[in-house]
Length: 223
Image: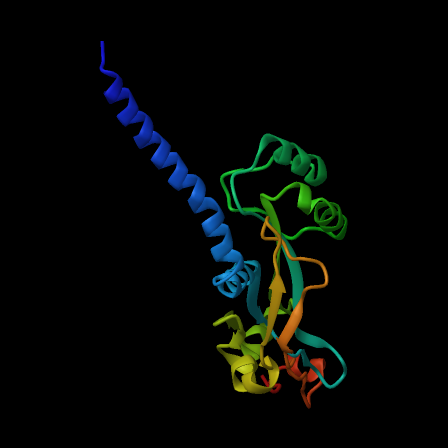
């Protein structure tokens, strides 16, 4: 049988340990609401705040008689932020009316207006989901004009011209990106009405050509 003195020693060791632990709790609380209060608040705001660039809308390319040769179109893609639960997958299949590939980070490209509305309304219930805007540069379907118009590529969050008129007049067409700041909730979703522009985007100017469409397409025209 163990000696009473051994039990007393263990008792006092445990008592000192738990007593110290209990004293540390109010000490840490005092520290965070006292000397470290400002730093704690700033750190919390930093984690809850998100900033980013707002791409400028690239200007259109338009013929003299009003035919639009190049323009922007906005699409909304559905992405996942974590593995989908069975509940979320069933919800999406009901809205999108198709099977969901849960392995792909981009769940669905190009939501329709109705799909966008239904999913956006329930985003807080499904924190695995986020809707991401995407802008594409679109061109007139007649392939004879494609080399003349040129094309764009995304560079540093900006649509930049790399050939043809797109490259030649890139500075005027591109504009300048803006910058935003927004607060996030615990699911990393935007908090309503917290959006603030640090710098508003300056959208690009439309390019009006001196030729009409028929002149551009005519044999020996201005291509």
